[in-house]
Length: 97
Image (cartoon, rainbow, N blue to C red; front, side, top):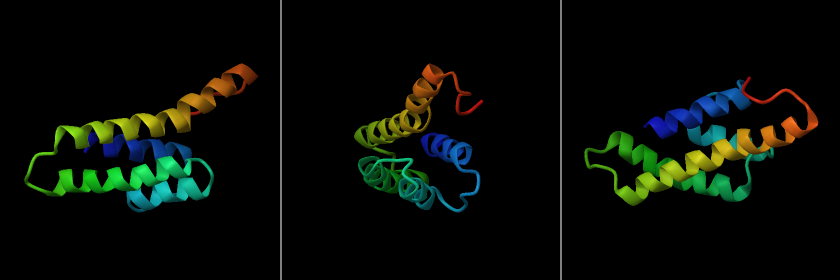
C-alpha cells in the first residue's frame, strides 16, 4: 500500500488537477506524454497487484512486491529524476521543490 501511496503523492506533485483513483491518474499522465506507453501498461498490471494486496486476506507474493517496488522506482525516476537532471544542467528550478 505504501508504494501506491508514493505513486499517488508523486502524481499529485506532477499534476494536482488529477483526481480519482491511481489507475486513471497514471493513464492521464500517459495521455499527457509524461509517462511512456511501456510504463503505463506496466502500471496497469502492477496497479491490479496493489489492489489485490490491499483488499485480499492472502499475503502478497515476493515477486509481486518486487514488481510494485520496481514500478514505483521507474515512475519516480521518469517523472522526477530524469527531468531534474536535465533541469539542473539548464540551471532551471527542480521539480518537487
